[in-house]
Every structure is written in structure tokens, then in C-alpha cells.
Length: 97
Image (cartoon, helix red, strand yellow):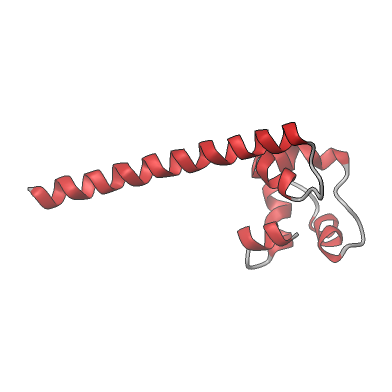
């Protein structure tokens, strides 16, 4: 839940429910500890938040799954770095005119 609260600092349960197309009350129960996500929601959670998010919620993930999650995080960070580099290059070009 802490990861979701970081991603959605305001109305976290409502935002998660909308993001994975789940009933708000169901997600509210996850946040309150009354229930845990069922297998029906594993796919939508993985699709929306990624493997690294799911593995981050595990107490002791198996090593190969942890490796996959780290690789996913690395690829995401590299893509973000490329986008930042492109923005900086564009700013430099505009300033050089």
C-alpha cells in the first residue's frame, strides 16, 4: 500500500481502483487490511504498475523474479534518461540560436 500511496498521494484507493478498473470498495478493503488483492487483479496490477511494483510488495521474492524486476526498473530509468537528454539537447539548441 505504501507504494500506491507514493504514486497516488491523494485519494490513493480511488486512483488505484480507476487505474485497474476495480470497484473502489474492493480497493479500499486492500488499503484497510480487510482483504488482499485476488488473482483476478494480478494481471491488471502488473499491466498498470509493472513487475517491479509487484515484486517490491513481496517480502522474499525468488531471485529470478527480483532480477526481472530490477531489469524492468533499469529499462524504465534508461528511457527516462534518454527523454531528459533529448529535452536538454533541445534546450541547448534553442539557446544556441
